[in-house]
Every structure is written in structure tokens, then in C-alpha cells.
Length: 116
Image (cartoon, rainbow, N blue to C red; front, top):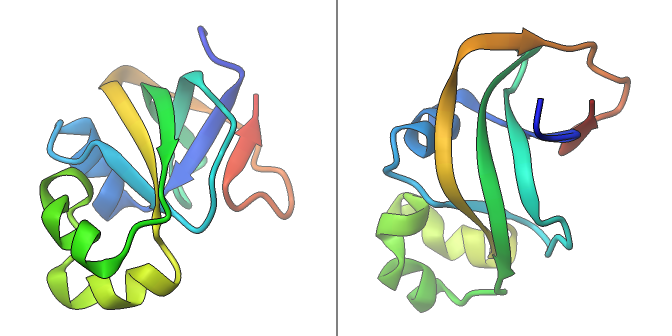
């Protein structure tokens, strides 16, 4: 395993990331984490992919989010609410699905990151 932590992402968004159609994971704050990370499908108990976390951008205004729709895929009607909450982009590159998902034990209280 070439990563020591994994990001928890809901299936809807994770599938878009792993298909290459979403390169920004929208979050409520910046992150200082950089490098190779695992991608966990929320609620599955599995690391299902990997990506390089290359940058943390924002906060973005609603207009900026509308302009960058292809990167984050938030519905336009959500963009106004996203300004209030999900207005930081964590830039992901080279996302790929693992051939064999890796099971892990989910620590109590983990909602964003899991140390592996």
C-alpha cells in the first residue's frame, strides 16, 4: 500500500472521481494533506481506490463554483448552498479504482479521514 490515510467519500461522488469526471472533492475547509491517499466508499468498510491529493483551493463564491462545474459536479441549484458549506476544493489527480478493494476497520468518530 503506497498510502497511509484514506478519505471517506459518498458513493455518488466517489464513482465520478474514479471515472475521471470529477477532479475536485468539495469540503468545508482547507487541508494540508498532499500526496497519495486511499479513497473509501462511505459505509462500505472498503478502500476502493487511490488518488493524488495535489492542492486545496478556495473558498469559492457561487459564481466561481458555477464556472468550475466540470471539476466538482455539484448541481447548479446546490451551488448557492455550497458557498455556505462546501466551498473548498481538494484537487485530486490520477484517481484509479483498486482491482481488489482493501477492507479496513473504521475507527469510531471518523468522518473525513481514516489512518491506515
